[in-house]
Image 1 (cartoon, rainbow, N blue to C red):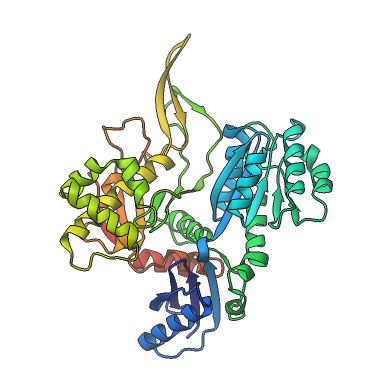
Image 2 (cartoon, rainbow, N blue to C red):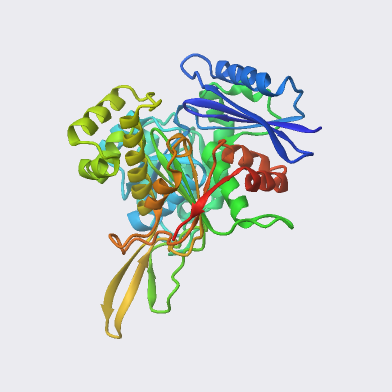
Length: 463
């Protein structure tokens, strides 16, 4: 029997998955508190004891891990124009598994410098200008960063005409030069920057988050957890070798602090009279909503949905809902545990989180008039023809109403401009295996795909 141990160091829990490669099955899973306040390895050892109590003691042939402990990769990006190089930088960062804390456009100011110092990012992505285009902005920003004496690595991926000069300006600091994320107007080239960001994660962030001792157990490199999940859903969608995938999909991960949305879909206009506006969207796209979460970011859900909507979905009075929400702010680790009012509130919060996050991720369609008559204008991804939604995150997989929560991710006549999916099959990651299968897919893709297709729980077909 060939066994592989897969570890996900999360901000709250360290999750372990043991896999039998020969039988293409999961031997067992376990979770323990990450214990980042003391030593992250304590959480790992506790998780291993729980796993061993379930499956016995095993000598694992290989061990791989991903991590989002302590918030994962905290990125700041800086570009020239918000809708162009700034957006290209954001897409590169999110696709690499980072959490984008701030996006700056145009020239950095003294106030921006103070804010950057307060944020203390793990990595700074500096871009700006197409190749041969504007160089003033990126050179100015390089000067500003050099003057603040950065103690964080800088990934330089802007106008190649300014790359050498920027490198000279930032001489003496940790700088990595990559090809321009937008070499031509409207053309993206984000993969090299994404690869560099992941390498920095391996070389620097592992030590910073206290993972260096744990990494001694590993057979190979680690990766950010969102990168692992993205890798898993890409495989699940497209398949590999002679094993088919399930087709285009949207994946929803509602957490306590953030909500991550992944889409694996073409997303281009489907009608001839539709004009596409903005940068082309990546086929495999990730967004993270830092203000939408079930506990630490609960106020973001209230602000976006409104207390009336939460009361409508939960069946609670405004006074009761408000009191419960305040209690969750003070006690973010609280779970319903047979408390009917809390269960109803969590249902409403999860429904609103899914609706808001998928709406932000999906594109929009609007009408415009030209000399040739009416045309439709699409911005962002068209997800209306996506046929699958995969959900994960505690508030979803532990709910008795997974399908009803997921309905809020779908197209609605109340918001017809949002290009969300219309008719889907709903799948739930009930055993938290997506990140683990993303790790496994780097080495055993067919096995990872078969396990996902076997383990993901079907929750119905929308009408």
